[in-house]
Image (cartoon, rainbow, N blue to C red):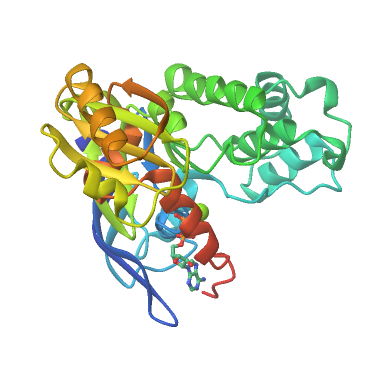
Length: 338
Ligand SMILES: Nc1ncnc2c1ncn2[C@@H]1O[C@H](COP(=O)(O)OP(=O)(O)O)[C@@H](O)[C@H]1O
Ligand SMILES: [Mg+2]
């Protein structure tokens, strides 16, 4: 019996630090426990360190310090055992586009030392499960984006891993295909008991799929818990206001400085979001205060806390803005030599 069964944790990360050459501190001491048999979401904007964490947990990169155990095995000292226990779908496809679907799966099986009748059966089952049976003989180059992703996941499952890593599985997919992928991911945990660690920079994806999630920001875990718990911890509402015209620097904060019940304001030149104790009470006060300073309001809405608000509470920034900023700064990860 391996250790995963003993303590019910599929992944245990302690004090993990990764400093890349050039002194980029991609992970700044993270601790995480991923229970077996569910989807765990690692949610963070571009550049937060998600791929770095996945690479270390999947033995593709070394920690600078700290320990990671996957399925009970240490990723540095027992890398071979870890590789046997996991499947990995990277941010970029691992499918060989010159081979057809069946060949891709067979090749993966042979790499994993599965042969003969067992391999044929496994490949047939996966083609069926992932809706690729009719396209099994088509070269993957001609697959749609969604089909390629499905083949990617099927390929990672040939050897029946216990833990599956999906690094941004729906980035670049159409919304419709994304929903299909969500259903597939849910099926894999519910029906097959897989543990899935999924990274994402889509708030709604984490909200929908993750039984538990960790919010990663600038290499640090800012919060962990189920999406419901994290949202419930935020009391109050969020007000979104769109201004008719661009506001001058500092004008929004100045206008709202004396409004009671505002906990936090985040804004750009034309839109603002305020966390307030009570939406219905705060809306008229906020509108009055803005209009009194000559800031005309185009639209206003009130909403219950979302994961976006959770992110803002823990990081002081708006997720979409952090994500764009991260994307601008980011160098491609992946060329690191072992
Ligand atoms: N091979 C590398 N060499 C140097 N810096 C890197 C490398 N890979 C990633 N980084 C940097 O580490 C940080 C985290 O990157 P990454 O783990 O790819 O984040 P995410 O997957 O959350 O977008 C970023 O600042 C990124 O630019
Ligand atoms: Mg990434």
